Length: 251
Length: 268
Image (tube, rainbow over the protein chains, first blue to last red):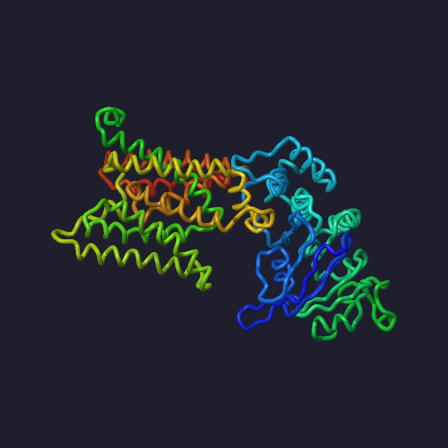
């Protein structure tokens, strides 16, 4: 069963094509990765999926009555607002109840405790967000998205420039959520992503799609528009097609 | 001064005015500082000068004209921005100067001697009338009601408006409501600090409060307290040295800001 269907979606900024006839769908419970160069339309695609931008052409069908669980790029995230970790996470529960004089219920608070435990950040609950490290902030944003109890989770560059321990924690968590939730991850971190995902797509204005999750030199060349040195991106050996192995060394 | 407070109606008005102004500036100031709508707010305040001129020309209460112009700009800026993608900064600059230009234009057409505009431009807390107080009470009541009835919505919207939109909060309505609240608040404050100096009273208290506040509600409350202290000291200096209150309030605020930077540095 599909959870999201994207059909022939195009977005233009003036004369510039940001997305050109993008079509793909995601099976319920699967884990899709989208990679692509900067300026390739990754952010635009996310905004279209979230409904923040209306596509010029095409349509997006979401088979879920719950809002998408969105995890924004933490290093673009403004962290000067005076708010503590637990209050940020609680905000996610507003997706269920938005009445006038809204107050968080005891259940909301209990649920936020569970989510904090799941991410191992309960000791940070009263910390101001500006006092968090990158990895900690990323976990807070994931926790907030989980509070909305989404069917579909979209993460924008979740592991860019964070410490390796947090990176492993986050991928392990996503791996356990997989199946129960559908996960779409958008990243240029090709190496790490490919060992977790079910399928992968490369986005550079157009979308190049791969059911089996294999990244080939052809795919990357197509998407990036020029040959890319896979080794430089730290791709583990097991996802490398044979013909690339000779003569290259990875770090 | 305590004696004067008991004896003179204008001193009582000034004190009530300072109290109401600090409630308004605490809330709106904290919001625009977090939202980074500072220049926009200043632009809306300046555009209201056109309405003051219109009031003089057509012989009605200038403050009502100011409301008209400020609300009109606050609707126009986001609407034109959405339709034409001009950028709200550019539109703010245009309406800012258009309002000022129209004000001067209308006053030039006003029959008789040109009126004294200094109290509108620079404010004078000592000339606040009972009618001004009533206007401030109504505006403060509107702002407080809208803020408190949807407090968690406002917090979510100010913290991360994209996320607020995704979980189903109508952020574009909140945009318009916030523009409207800014418009009525700046006009309500004109008599206190004047069009030109409003922005300082809106931004300095939250800028200091941000050093210490650990939550948004505390940011608002600290800003209110600081705003009241500054207004009170400003009023005091105004009264004894006969200097317009707008200037004294702003100078006191700036000095307090500089001191708070040093305190903050020494504590780190």
